[in-house]
Length: 268
Image 1 (cartoon, rainbow, N blue to C red):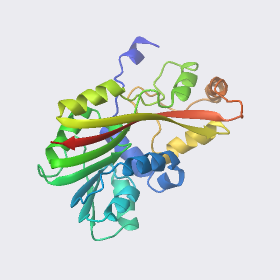
Image 2 (image 1 turned 120 degrees about the horizontal axis):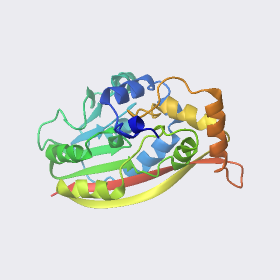
Image 3 (image 1 turned 45 degrees about the horizontal axis):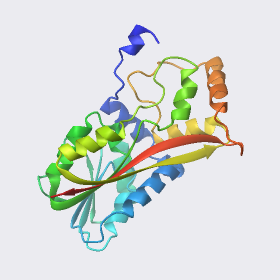
Image 4 (image 1 turned 30 degrees about the horizontal axis):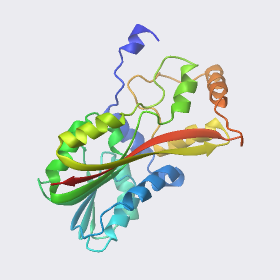
């Protein structure tokens, strides 16, 4: 790795994230098996009580917001996302009267203080630069006794792909994510009572191109400032494929691991 590559901040620009996910709105649900699994796990931990005002933070195509709107005792659900393309898709798919769609930055929520009963956020906040600020904003908008159900990704996510790329060059090809210790410290500093758990989910593919095509269709491909510019040559792709082959399992599948953190937060 050159000195210039080392000095690049391993972070993302919000406009790049918004653009990437906006472009993926029409293909996202077709390949979002992992995202559905994580959201279903998180939904199963929502307390069994009524929530008048609910926020789906990072609502994407609106699938989960629509499910939250169907819960008994839910009066209105606000689907918030930074990607306008996702919001446009959600508006067309789910025009129900109790669903409201709004462009929003998780680090600066356009909501009144103590106005929300439940914040739900599945696999969205890992794209934010300042997770501490996100926690502070969630704490601000929740009513006393309100809950936040949150899922995010840890640093071992896609480690197979990261290690395969390390055999090709020194650029950042895989989005880095925050470790569990930092996440837990941030939510506690924000004043939440915390319940958390973690799991590794392994998706399997016959060929590497299936994984990379899926990441592109999700809008979750590399958006880091340290990513290489321009097209990837055939020789480098072949070297990447050879590096990934080292992970092929006994059943002949290529694994892709996701390090998932779940949190159930309560505002006292």
